[in-house]
Image (cartoon, rainbow, N blue to C red; front, side):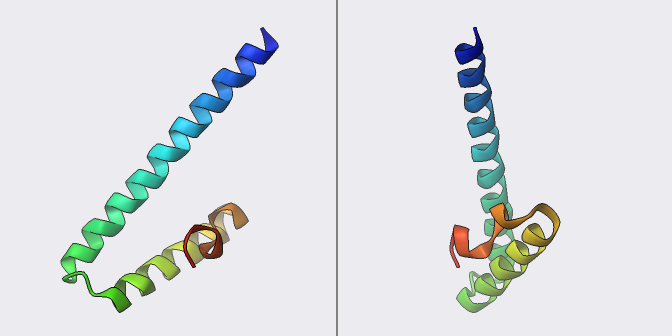
Length: 68
């Protein structure tokens, strides 16, 4: 029962985190479309976003981990 419960929790967390990252990506894509996909602007947006997320939620949202 304990092992099954742990697996279920891990699956739920993984699914939730995958959805979170997908939604963040979708919002970034929408933002980029407003600025005609400018690469330098996109890099600035991503860097700013990761700094804000890291400041509020810790190193697990570091830009270096996710694409910096």
